[in-house]
Amino acid sequence: MQIEAMSCGKPVISTDIPGSGVSWVNKDEVSGLIVDVEDADQLALAIEEICEDEKLNQKFQQGSKERYETMFTRQSMVDRCVRLYRQLLMS
Image (cartoon, rainbow, N blue to C red; front, side, top):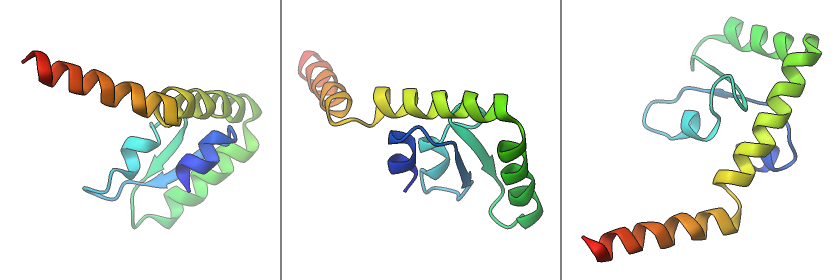
């Protein structure tokens, strides 16, 4: 759901689940906030912070949309795969 939210330019709050890639999708302080998995207080504070700080909310909205467009659109993924294949072929 992170990627879908980012495609709409929504700030993301995610938990840092080790080995899951979740915290890689949502870049902390760029597209939203990352909180510890078992820290409900930290999650509540992150929600409050984004809801109450309009400037921060707008920063994360912009960062979220930009990260989606550069990392997760079909075209950006195809471009990265093509670059990777070319690098492998040239090795």
